Length: 266
Image (cartoon, rainbow, N blue to C red):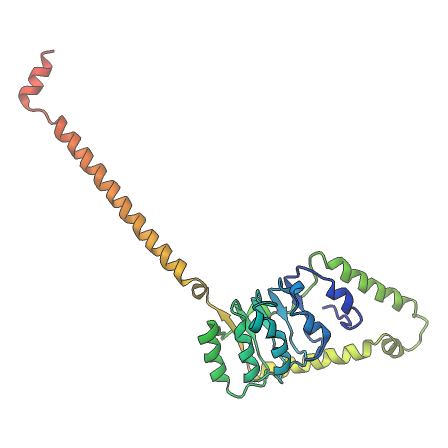
């Protein structure tokens, strides 16, 4: 995993365009962070996978994040995968704001502060067609998290700059002092907190949801079945016509004994 100080690189991140996947897990953004507001802008309407695990979000943050979609039908309208796990201040009210994401295929709200879990499960299934998964979904597996695509070089440059700065300070005797100097102590503490929250979430149970494939397009499936049935009927009609034609030819070619005797005289 790569841990970047979001606030320090906010302007660079805001310059990204046509992103389809964005992982901001354990960044502690909070409801008022500028980046959360930027997520609702048209520049990031291409995002299909958004991971906001353990970001100190509450119902207020979800209300702001979903406002463009709910009111203007803009913003994150193309979102397919959303991770809001390990945000205990998100309640049943906040889940209601997510119903505006009509294209949502996968949702993780494990560790949310839900009061009536069963009611939320039924609501998500009725309104969005999302089914509660009994097993962990691979869509929310962070073990292979890495930066890919055109932004990879930018992130590598950030990391190289940090490494160069660290090399220049090798004369510092205390590694603890060096960590504090670069703000790494705080980030390590945040990482530990993230792991603790994740452990508590696993203990309380998983609330991951997915949409069954046949729920996405029931009408095309019915149409496809009808087309298949019609095709079979057409084949039957063609075969029947061919059989009638063959039988008709056989009738025309059916000769009597006298006819054969006559032909043999030629």
